[in-house]
Amino acid sequence: MSEQKKVVVIGGGITGLSTAYYLQKEAKEHNLPLNVQVLEGSNRLGGMIETEKKQGFTIERGPDSLLARKPSVFRLIDEVGLTSDLVTVATGKSYVLANEKLHEIPSGSYMGIPVQVRPFVFSSLFSPQGKLRAAGDFIKPKSKPQTDQSLGHFFRNRLGDEVVENLIEPLLSGIYSGDIDNLSLMATFPNFYQLEQKYGGIVRGLQKTVPKPSTNKTGKKPSPFRTLQNGLGSLVEAVSDSLEEGSVQLETSVTQIEKKAERYELKLHNGEVIQADSVVITTPHYAAQSMLSQYSFMDSFKEMPATSVANVAMAFDQSAIQQDINGSGFLVSRNSDYRITACTWTHKKWPHTTPDGKALLRAYVGKPSDQGAVDLSDEEIADIVLQDLNKTMNITQKPEFTVVTRWRDSRAQYTVGHKDRLKQIQADMADELPGVYLAGASYEGLGIPDCIDQGEKAVQNVLDYLKA
Ligand code: FAD
Image (cartoon, rainbow, N blue to C red; front, side, top):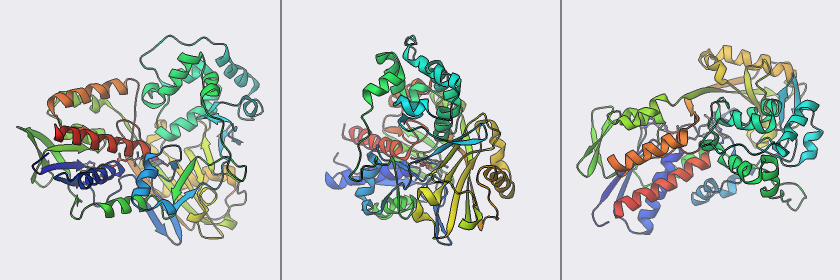
């Protein structure tokens, strides 16, 4: 690469920021003549990551947890000097609300699938018939090879409806905010299919492959989650502070991308045009489709659904909660008549977020079958949450304050066939739009580490393209 090249990153969420960060790092380390520009449509960086400080509380409007076993986010945290701010989750226990009662999630499970059988046998979460049906996984033959199927179909076939509805569904739909009977197995947990095919059953497969949990010096199992002392927004700030000055342009939406000979022209909302040699699109799929609407191969993104959720943080005096429970929170089984889908006892899970003597609860509304809840007023949403919480926790006072955040169309649904459709789009893009790449939550994983992985992959793709 001898002449100056310009790379435009569209979107300033964690995917776009990590892409820009690693591109600039590569340029510095290898003396590459690269100019990297991030164009963000809104007036702030971070996308779904947003931390608010209020009256001594640290409130996450979006994500609050980093999965400890996924390294890319911890690498990025280290790069920007925040490793000493990492905080480990304070309590390991969590619950599922099923049949109007809280049941502790049995230990020794992996994404709700039993690895150790004993805790499942003694769990109050399942009936004897449900447990017996789940044991069928040991004797049922492996299913016929399939290119894809829904998560619900796969797990129901192996473990039965009850284990799925009381544990696996609440866990997985908590992650994907979607209906597991529509979500793709191969785009979310292909490893379970591979275990079934290789070992004849998923429990047996997990028992053979999941390493026994190591214990730390105190004899406790290491906790699966981390966060940052000053909220995940501090990662967004640190990454954007590490970018070269002038790299980010806020309130700049890209409306159209056009190929012009060897370069690209990006049309902006204000009529301006920016030229680029390579482009990384890190926006949701529907925004990407609209920027490239002249290409029919992008049309399948029009059919790709996205669900909305509202996140409701409520601050209380500790005395308001008569029945405080020791644990990080609970998920709600789809068979219950609750409208909330989950509640985090944030003051227990992350004590550093809450002043002494106070409690901070965070609940979600917006099940796939109750999307209208997200459009209710703040007061109506707060009432729904309080009514539901009262059934389990006996809350005697009104919250000191409530923060409602709506994330509309934020949860891209990887429905059955997602991987193949994406592969086809990527192949068509490589043919017709060389040097343009997709990365982010709509494509190959929606956890923060998955987004950073995709950002790093896009960096490699851009460099390979520009060097060729
Ligand atoms: P986004 O954050 O959506 O960023 C995309 C950016 O593109 C946005 O800033 C948007 O304004 C911009 N944009 C859109 N259109 C245009 C355009 N035309 N031009 C320019 N810019 C544009 N993950 C975890 O790992 N742990 C958790 O605990 C967790 N909890 C979550 C809780 C909630 C409530 C939500 C909503 C998500 C959660 N996630 C969690 C998922 C994770 O936060 C997201 O998947 C991730 O942050 C998405 O990052 P992204 O950069 O791909 O997309």
